[in-house]
Image 1 (tube, rainbow, N blue to C red):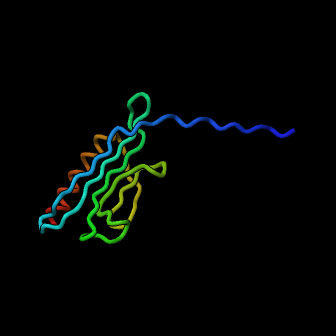
Image 2 (image 1 turned 30 degrees about the vertical axis):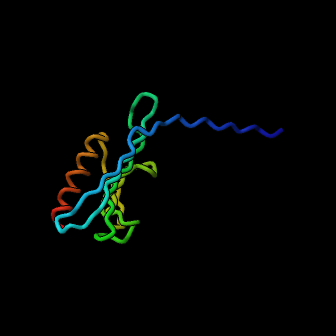
Image 3 (image 1 turned 135 degrees about the vertical axis):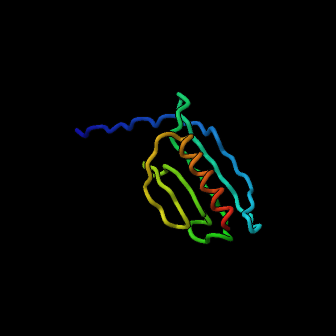
Length: 109
């Protein structure tokens, strides 16, 4: 007799943040900041995606100049097509790191 395999239901996630904002670099090149955050039933951040997209600065990785996410089960930083694993403490700390880095990139470009 074959054993029936039952899948555990995925926990329900709620998309708490889905924002996009247009920004301009020092040279006037227009880009976009995307911030997406999903939370569990306790309000804890379980998935996130932060991206600075500007095709004038980077054609690789769909124009993602800079990004942070945990889409693949670990935390990673993206920079013009290169991805690397990074440490993580809290979403708030990672978001602050992202926005500070975007400000530096904007001023240089």
